[in-house]
Length: 79
Image (cartoon, rainbow, N blue to C red):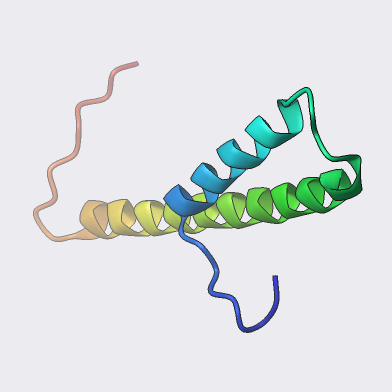
């Protein structure tokens, strides 16, 4: 991805991955562009993984803040 291109959001990246998968699975896949499409798919996967990781970290932070808040109600121990 060039520095001029905007990084796609998760949903957009997944949609593009679906399109690439359809192209790769086609019987008439153009071998000349196959490596290029696989490379783009790898880039999109890295973007999606980064988005998932960032979201997980943010959710954990928010939950930790809620747990640490004065008067926080915690779920009963279910062990």
